[in-house]
Image 1 (cartoon, rainbow, N blue to C red):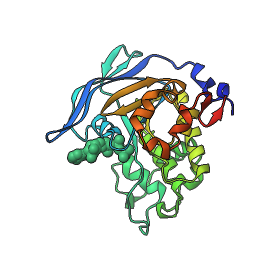
Image 2 (cartoon, rainbow, N blue to C red):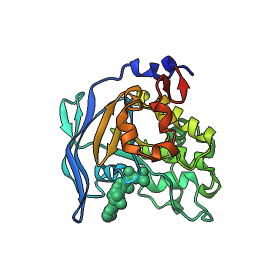
Image 3 (cartoon, rainbow, N blue to C red):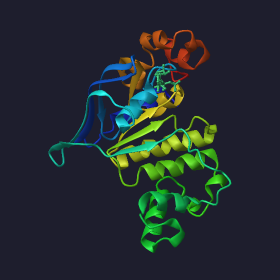
Image 4 (cartoon, rainbow, N blue to C red):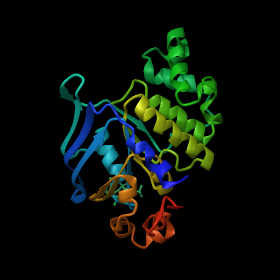
Length: 271
Ligand SMILES: Nc1ncnc2c1ncn2[C@@H]1O[C@H](COP(=O)(O)OP(=O)(O)OP(=O)(O)O)[C@@H](O)[C@H]1O
């Protein structure tokens, strides 16, 4: 894939009617300052990749947005269709789901437990089954409806968790290295799905990833984070920035990051 094809999707237009802003965002745990002065504008219909060295604060930022840990500053969601600012509905896809792989729990059970107040042992309504089936279609997983969770592959499980995070439809979708343990084919499918869904649902997405190759190919924007925002912009801009080398330091040599810093090479692809 050439550089033009890699970045051509950036030229597509989102609705531009809603956005999420983090303003003066900071997190301290005990006396340790983990994040400071974070100002990010997350655009609707766009996939924003959050990259940075280990311990840079990426997971902490997602946890703070989810409200799991306290923060300073503000998170604002502007719904321009309704002409008002409100709390965003946030969906989340974790790196993995910890569960007993031997438990007789199906994909349908997982959705029912999340979407319905009725105990799973009482069965489900036809309406709920149709709703779950429709959600799974969007992530190419409708054939997995009755499958036991323990029998799913890593990629299938992450697609199911993606469908779960999209129901009910969020304003902001957060994903923390969602396919880090998944094989290359599964990773590619997952990124393609997310890439298509972002425009289909006008989703604002923040995706934490160490996979700079995928980031170069699928992200609309990149935020380089190490305690604070070091650099933000289009993938071609951030992934060729000297700040990337500074942030990753020696580790850069052990990751694909070095590819992006050589002149005339982006995403490991000569241009
Ligand atoms: N509960 C906690 N108490 C103290 N320090 C913490 C706590 N949670 C996270 N930290 C520290 O905050 C820093 C940021 O951690 P975080 O997990 O957010 O980084 P990350 O960018 O997601 O890292 P990685 O890429 O390795 O997943 C690290 O130095 C970590 O040790």
